[in-house]
Picture 1 (cartoon, rainbow, N blue to C red):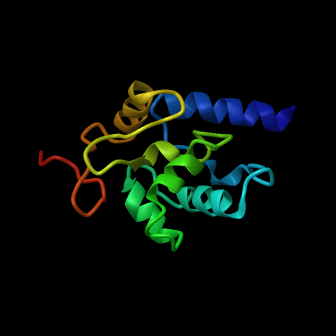
Picture 2 (picture 1 turned 180 degrees about the horizontal axis):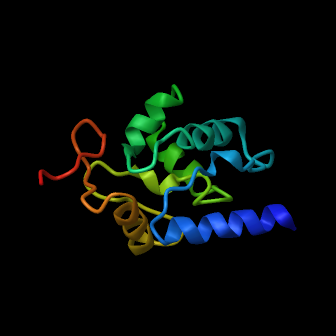
Length: 128
């Protein structure tokens, strides 16, 4: 029960705008294919406040022609905030998300209010 309270506290902190390291939580991915596991494990490496494109994620898992399969694997994510699949975006916008596009945009804005997709697929901040 104690571990459950800790993740609940971390979720509240994160959704309130606090920086939380979710990498300390294990997520059981055994029910997924090795490819899906590789995709989700790679997503865990995307830092807070950064984004990559689906195509870049496909390259990172050494399957550059599997962009659609990467998207499908993200749809199998059993823990969407712990495994931050919202940080994977389309080339021209946020892309899909299991809780809907508006929820994805809210999470992206929570982490970086000036997020946008760039040609290098890294998130850039607007000049101040």
